[in-house]
Structure formats: C-alpha cells, structure tokens
Image 1 (spheres, rainbow, N blue to C red):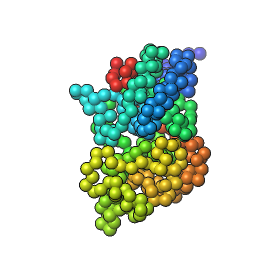
Image 2 (tube, rainbow, N blue to C red; image 1 turned 60 degrees about the horizontal axis):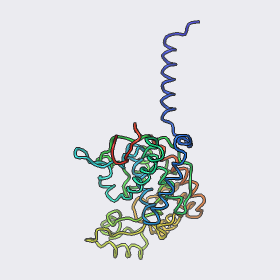
Image 3 (cartoon, rainbow, N blue to C red; image 1 turned 180 degrees about the vertical axis):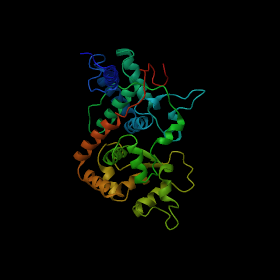
Image 4 (cartoon, one colour; image 1 turned 60 degrees about the vertical axis):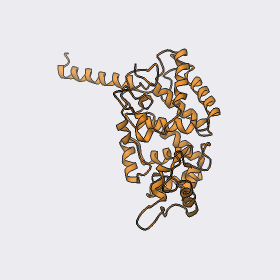
Length: 320
C-alpha cells in the first residue's frame, strides 16, 4: 500500500528534527573515545592555578555563569574584542572577570592531546565544576558536547541579572533561560565564593531611600563596616568585601549570613522576599548536604542552556 505524500513529508521532517536534536544533545560520555584524558587534564590545570591564586575558583564559576546567561553556554564570553566588535568580556558586568589564562592553559594542553576535539565551552563548564569541587563543594557529572559560538557582543551583557534586581526581576531573568525559582536560590549559593566591589552594593549602604541611609534589612554593625570599607566617595579602585566569611571555601555560610542580615547584594536579600524562596534559604542554611545536592542539580541544568555554537575553537580567544 502506497504511503500518502503528506505522511512521507511528515516522516522526513520528524527524522530531520530528531537527527538535529540528537546531534545537539549533550552527553556525559561525549569524549570517552575521542579525548579520554580531557577531564583529568582540566582538573590538574585548575588545581595548579588554585595553588597560585585563591581567587581562581570564584572567577571560573562566575565566568561560566556569565557565559551561559548570554547566548547560552557557547564559550562566547571567552572571545577577545576585535577592531570592529566589542566582545562580552569587555561589557560593563564582565570587566571584573578574570582567570581567562586558566582556560587558555587547559586548551593548550587539550589541543596537544586531542587536536580540534574539545570545545572551549565544554572546558569552561568542566573547569567551573572542578573549581567548586576542589574548594570543598559538590561535584557532578557535566553533560558535554557544546560547540563554540562565533558571536560575542558587549551590549548583550545587559541580559545578565543585576545585583540590584528584586525577586520579580530575578525570577523573570532566570525563567527566560528555563531556570526555576528553586534554581535561582540554589545557584545564588555560588556567592559563597569570591569578592564584590563596592559598586555592586553601594545602593544599600548610602542614601538607601528617603528615610534610611542604609538598607534597614542589613544588620547595623555589618552595614557600618561596609560603609567604612566603601565610603560614599570611594577612591580605592578595588575596594569591596568578600561574599561570605569563608570566601575560599564552598559551603553554606552564604545562607546563614543572609538570614542574619549580612548579605551584600539587593538580589541576595530579595531571596527572603517570598515564602518559597525564604523556606529554601532556611533549608540550605540548616543543611549543607541539601544545598550541595540542589546546587549540583541546578548547575547541570544551567550548563545545559542551549547555545548556537558551530565550531570547536583551536584558541578560546578567537574564532576559527
């Protein structure tokens, strides 16, 4: 019996759609045959970099987050600006990104092992995972198979969530990328690592509103200490504060401080604004295991945000 032409067209379309999805699908064993030593090489380079610079873990985690939130996880944050284009890494929210040299060092070793096989986007995702695990945090099986994007525009960094966002703005920003309110609270725990410049929380410690100089949700002595470090007319270029009391250790201290009025960003404080998010903050403050489990799951989800990458760069700073 002959198959109607309309059915054949539908079958062809369905197969093409499936093939496309299969090609773009990420896999935990993507490099098992083509570059089996990729993950161990990345971990070794990250570990060595951490010994020389304690800020590396926070830098790599933030870099991966900023990559995924603009154009998906396609390594576009790694590209250098050119004469005709200002790239993401030179956009205002990304000027303080650093440790790109770690990705360069990994890429060089990986290219010696398996030329043209492992994408820069995958290297960044794996390096971020290792940075967390080597700092005492959880580990997870990173899905792999991302391709590197060729487009990187500084103007698009406006899409990144701001430290001044309220809960509604944060929820909308994350939802646009397929991330839930639960993901938002878990991923915010990444603030347990790192350092924030005064400009990121200036709005909370000087002229907060018509009735308060400082944000009344801030613990009084903590607000005073921040004002001391960050005076209104601050002239110290790199002045700021650590994100929590154990800044090089990945733990749940961030949530404990948040409940005690010692968070830095308005976006951190906003996690206490709804019953759902406040309940999760309390849960993670009370159980590091629960936080680690949720963080790992949300990182897998975030690192799987689809990009439009088409190539495997030979140098992470330049398109092929």
